Amino acid sequence: MAGNNSNEIRIAGTGRILVAAVGAIAPTTFTDPATDWDSKVWTDLGYTSTDGVTFSKKDKIDPVETWQAVSPARFVYSDRDLTLKFAMMQFNADTLPFFMGGDLPKPVGDGSGGVFSYEVPDGPQFDERALGLEFHDGTDITYRFVIPRGQVTASDDIKLVRKSAASLGVTFTALSSGDAQPLATFVMKDPSYATA
Image 1 (spheres, rainbow, N blue to C red):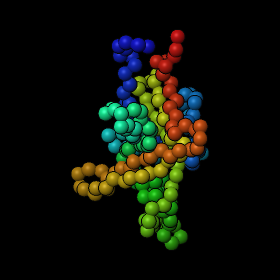
Image 2 (image 1 turned 45 degrees about the horizontal axis):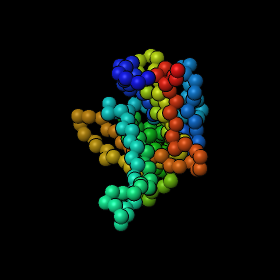
Image 3 (image 1 turned 30 degrees about the vertical axis):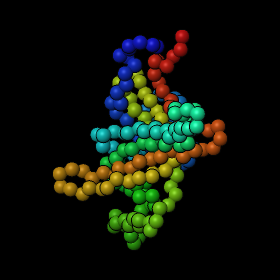
């Protein structure tokens, strides 16, 4: 609807981030947030920092210059970066490999002592995943955003200090899934999108 409407202002009051195998799709049912995302498919990454998620879409547009004009004659789309940046607060077998880009932690010895080892890879490894983001604005509005194929492309420094919790900050970048496939998908439970 055109014009000023405060009911269409969105505040991501609470949310979560989930990962799955490449190609997983967002659930389109909004029955129960605890069960809509199939736990056999999607893994919840748990607590994130109060900074939430920074969503970024950057397009690179190159001008086509001509001899006959000082202004560009047209533009050529040359690049698109779609990223989500967030910091995970929990350290476990799901979050550390997601941050580091390697294999799962392994038990030391027979595993009965609760001691585990995680080997940081010598070089970067491909670790493609699907990523889902869900946030709620009150009880009636829910947004879901899914990148069906992407990878962590940057990791923040881990600060180990006495006065604040350590976190695993990452930037997750969308990758193309092929011709005619979306780079990402929004699924919204929001009456603001109804058309007359």
